[in-house]
Image (cartoon, rainbow over all chains, first blue to last red; front, side, top):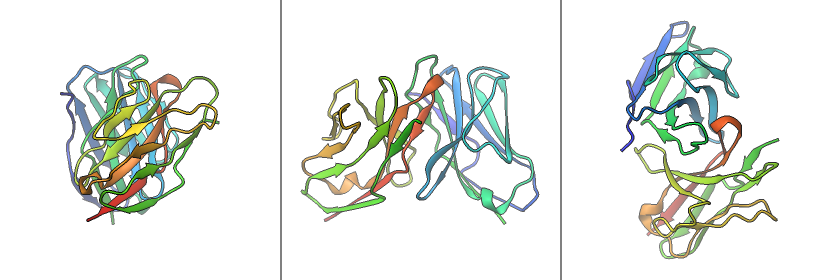
Amino acid sequence: DVKVTQSSRYLVKRTGEKVFLECVQDMDHENMFWYRQDPGLGLRLIYFSYDVKMKEKGDIPEGYSVSREKKERFSLILESASTNQTSMYLCASSPGPGGYIQYFGAGTRLSVL
Amino acid sequence: AQRVTQPEKLLSVFKGAPVELKCNYSYSGSPELFWYVQYSRQRLQLLLRHISRESIKGFTADLNKGETSFHLKKPFAQEEDSAMYYCALSGVADKLIFGTGTRLQVFP
């Protein structure tokens, strides 16, 4: 079974803090993704990565950055957290290329106060 | 533009009733379509994909290219089907384009 693990289930941070969300997958997948999930808006892609040290912007990258130093790990960084970044964050991975089935982590619910 | 539309935010039915969750898409080419499901307190997971042409947990979905639809159907809903359902479309470069989701509530 593919395992995608997000380091925190719940996080509470203050406005202006730098926030790191970590994601690890154990199936040697090429592709990794970060989404935010909001009611009524579905899943919106923040960033994705096809390979180590490679990253591409998704649909809503503003206010976020990512890091992929190792194939199995993909980190999402909020440089200066704001209240409008309060959300559920989902990490996913998929084999590539042409591997469209994505496997998701349990999610991190981030609250920015 | 590539887009997935799920017109219903909430669908409520009684146990044993038929269910149809609607999904329409816009895409030039031959897309691959998926349904993902998220049960309460569980992670988002693949339910089915159109190329498999399988029935999973009693659900089926047929790709209708003429109507650009990929509706999810089940003849007799069960309480355990209550969940959030997302339709998704394969985009460029291994990405998935998700709809906004439909919450299915099945009452006893």
